[in-house]
Length: 130
Image 1 (spheres, rainbow, N blue to C red):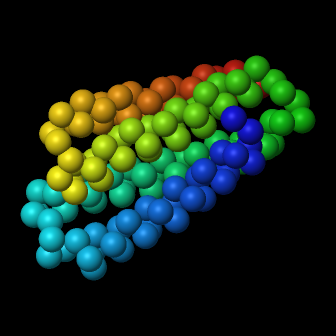
Image 2 (cartoon, rainbow, N blue to C red):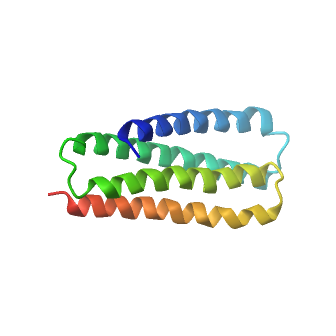
């Protein structure tokens, strides 16, 4: 993933996290149970934090784009993992809160694993940074 694409995805994900949080606070507050509002809030929180992480990765990638050192590839992996994690983890939680079949919950841990892969990839990049 390029630094530009990572930044675009991060900014859109951050914008959507704000919009989805506001949507729940205003439009869904009376529609969803307290349990599902907590689920929604968890999705918003994880989406926002990982949008920020992805934006940080995009900046780090841009700084390294001229040198293409050994940490560049792990950062590309981190960017992809964070994007996939937001889609699977947060997306499945939003869907579950809106009444999707509980079986969809099998996807949520896959998104969590993607988040962990993203953070581990950042660790590898940091370790390799000389």
